[in-house]
Image (cartoon, rainbow, N blue to C red; front, side):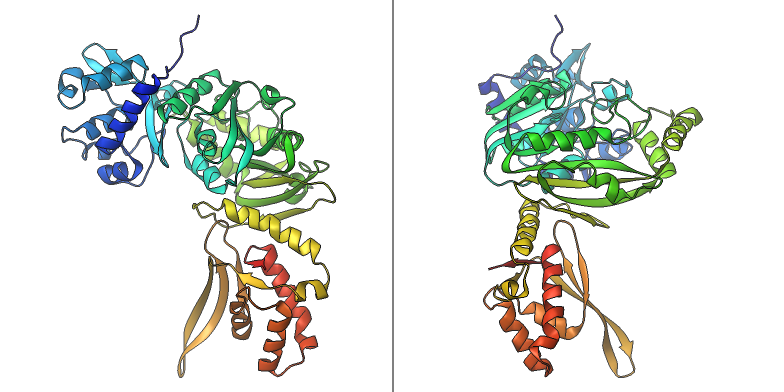
Length: 491
């Protein structure tokens, strides 16, 4: 019988571990301060030597950082003077520490994430190219967390849960949570992490894609799937055996069938652009016939050459960035006539009736929680559909959202400073920007949710000494665009 990779402590021991971690300051803020760095562990750990300079003092926090952040062994005789024996015994019984001669060697990384602690595999297992390697919380983990709609949910599914972090976060606002993964080792880590954080309400299931939850429906499904594109099939957490981006497309189609009416599916993904087809055409093909409204945002675009190099550098062990590996990627993309690779986010909402799809591009994403803004985007499209005529929208009261920012650029003129440009910008979530003239900026600034759009247009026309009919169509068009891009909500 195969031995588990990690063993959950008893509920009592888990509580004792949590209290100890809090007591010594093993929290995200304290760790970043202790290491004088704003970074998480990385596969290369190039900064480990620099970080060690800050961990010389013999404290409990420094000992745990050397074990569970940098993955270093420590002589047991030295560490027992600063770390309680009960902690060492509990850690060894849970298999997060291993006795190796006179040393205590870490078997996991332990990373604070939000108000939780998440155990994952060490860098040594990554270097060993173990296919079932369980990755720590990384930038995609944090971004999916920021992107997720966290309204009250009857049932939430974390598809491809990995270390379980998204499912554990969902437990705070969900009546029921299910975390699934193809990797049995990942499920073991997720179970450990749930116990460590005192969360007993998540159901953990091992299996491929939606097979473990066949026939079940959810209010919310989130997924950070193994979306890497290319010939590699090394790691379960990032690679998959389907061609190009077919896995992400399949997940999107299957997710629709597992959503309740009004339920949301949210996914991080990558997709290919091929000759003769725009990226928009390829992406919208995923959603056709799903019975869902879709809001998708394209982020970074990379050439085939740059994408290949980036992926090889990320997954290479040692100096294994060789010509043969690059040639394999080059052939893979050439045979499929791929011209570029895009990444981005997808949000789908199950809704009866005629569905819509909105595709946008963003030069950057702001990593602060913006799940409420996702809901606002869908509400905005609902509003525009329900108020298609001029008379309908004129009677409604627009409200400029508080995260909006008016940016003014001045240039030196003969008699002082003159306005060169005015831009209305969004400062949270997925930034948008609109260039405005000064009178229009003042008009938009009056959107306080108390007066109807028709009233505000009449006021504008009086100030500009123009007839309402002359400016009405332009103002309505502007209001619709600002609504669609998340600047306005309506009272």
